[in-house]
Image (cartoon, helix red, strand yellow):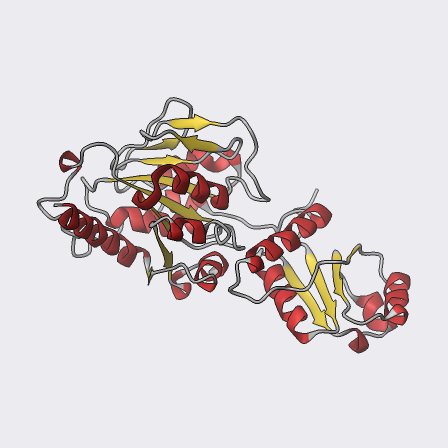
Length: 338
């Protein structure tokens, strides 16, 4: 049996703005946008020759003649009723985009993407750069209890970016990390090795009884939602993550925000879609920080771009710059508390 091809999507709408929004939603979630046009541009020949897996059709005005032609000349399923896209950057937009993705996923499955962890596992040690110095008054020993908790959020292209970030961090930084990475559950054990093979940070897939600790990384499991108690102990909910992705970045941000408030933060790395952009504003309102990887350094920038679009990102940088900024952020917080 051959490999499954990436689903090919055709977008048809008589509204230029709706076509643009639907096209961004399709491409941002990794599908092949094979056709994006107005209905009056498609004749019977073009319809019958279109090699698509699904049509996404949105008509502002009734056009029974076009719909009859589409039904007569294409065997691919047709998605209707995707609602008018809200203004991009509004809080409603990520929810609309999620609904579009859920309908596509239900119809043709997820996009076909590959994370080449084998290449990352065999990569050479990074060339040492100028080390990020840990201020002498900033250390794990100087913190009473659990201090800053940072969610690392990633999808396509995320493992390489997260590894670069972790490789640049100085040892002894009083920050606990939890990673929400969209990935096949069978690859999570490999992920625990490749992310820390050069930096030596303790890392494991979170289980009941585990604890958030400074200088350590817990990876959110795919199979079950996790939460934390007030001391950072892992709570395994035993239920699926809310939303179309697992683990859900939105749910992870919501859980960490509710538990840690202004001690929480998130760094959004390379990835598809807009997971995280619904709960991002909640973390910002609670006093937490949200930073993002720059688009030009991402393998896929849809995820950090979506977070930027809702206006919650206060710093952008390459992975090494994000690491340096985190150290400075910790130093500043220590100085303020002192």
